[in-house]
Length: 263
Image 1 (tube, rainbow, N blue to C red):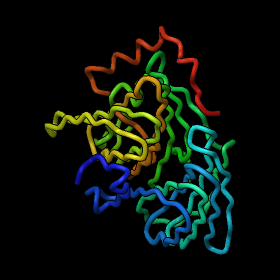
Image 2 (cartoon, helix red, strand yellow):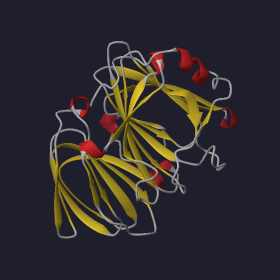
Image 3 (cartoon, one colour):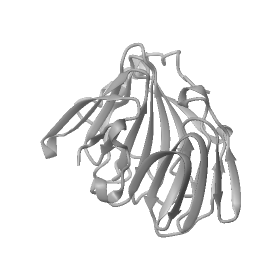
Image 4 (cartoon, helix red, strand yellow):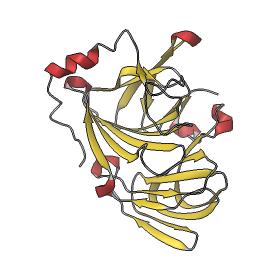
């Protein structure tokens, strides 16, 4: 399977299609009915409002015109849950296989922590939706906003070795929204792989291993939704050792004043 899925070809990912153990991702609209038998789920509306019914309860998730027009709402649903979504726009469905059933939880915009990360033209905004301290088993979810012309996920980092606390194994997807394009690099010297892909609105990259970094085209802000899953409640990663020095250089730079792009 290709690591880059184009919007027109569909961006549905399952453990079987990706060749990994836990993570699933898809985008839907309209009426969606599904039973999360062995998966915990996080629903993130990308545009418009949506109503979710599950286990005799109903939730209204407020809308935003697009991902660039407001902070996110989200809903965490546990495994063994049949749910129905009525979406006016698009909703991202992030899921991960798990063993224990937990409680549903609504995440409102005011619950989402904003982090400004990096400096100079490597400044970006992180919206933490499901953090490691969130009461889930494997699923982690963040939104990232990268101003036009900036680098993100930088310096290139990886999370494919179980060596806590410095690095843990995480399966990951990148789902992109932009009016222009961006460049995504994924490389692994150990596997002899070095990919540089042009990504556009609605595309999705599968990141099973390797170092990765992103750059937004000049003139076009970039959004991507990261869904991750692993056996540890951590997002620890290790930088490319040839580029790790860049973090120290940020001490002498101011953050890009355009960030946060959304608040």
